[in-house]
Length: 477
Image (cartoon, rainbow, N blue to C red; front, side):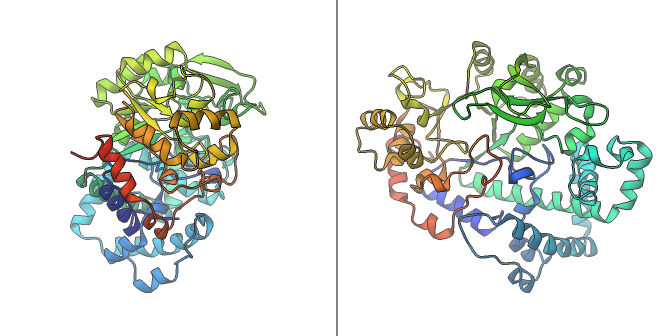
């Protein structure tokens, strides 16, 4: 399933060779239902399965024989279940060796990490220990006393699961060290890392369990009001995400401290952040938890400027990309523009209307980010072969091409646009079709599986990428 080891550095070397200066990643938090990074057990924790066993071996925490025993065949689909089982086995060995051979330097760094992240880490490690004990069932189905965080129960469970809690602390420490080392490797080569912050958190998460007063759940922890979007481009019945909505009044009473902590954390592990579903901060779609689709709901005012004024005051400069897709209102645009956040321009959306379409590159503003597509879109070639003939015709006219290499035409359009930043899915650089898309919104299975193999990266037309970076004056200065 990939990790932070040698292949990740090989990818960064490819970015440097081809004059790329941005690497945008999906959320790096633990994946939940359907292996989705947008359904996570925590808004703060790292996905520990991205820890590289090779790096653990170099640190003397694993043996070469142990690595050989967990190797899996390389393919274009992540083998999550097998990888999880194999990594669990060797991670426990590495953890035991870490604690058994901890130096004074290790202990100092480990304690500093725990202290710095105490505001989320202590709850998270206990949550994971309990979650594993209860076979990963939702926390509101656990024993009532621990589900409702009775002090005596929390104390008893911390003692009962002390060994697992030690393991969870170490996993987060190792994730942090490996990720920061990888990010620094990218930064040294002139590459900024753009992270991703989902607006909502999963119900079955340490965040909701530890802070129920901030979320629309009842005293038993059951969801009352949930998130989604009404019918749109992606789905005729809307998208019913099911995440519990925030009690913004309660968050405001605490000075939005949970959100400030979240943004501050993200700015320590990334150079910039794409804020998912930005429009939800202006107004969000509220749906009853019992609903089967997102068709029936209502728009409710979000925290807007009050939240971002607070974050700006506490965090300083906000290098944010606003995911401003979907139905945009004047309020969303005003909120985005007040803080000078660049919005997203998706070239695949440009050909369903006339020349005034805001996604056509000639209509872009400089303060924007051009994309051929995102993780929620088909690949550029996949889009071309599955959209209607009218859109294909418009795309051919606009690009003055046959459409056969529409992926390169879209990349060229994005790079030559006035947008300050231009970002493209790796699948479009590789010229891949629909079988290689990352996610189909509104579906719960068969997503988040795509991965590339090393020989696929070797076949990418690096000269073409370099040529376009030079032509558009986008290469590293």
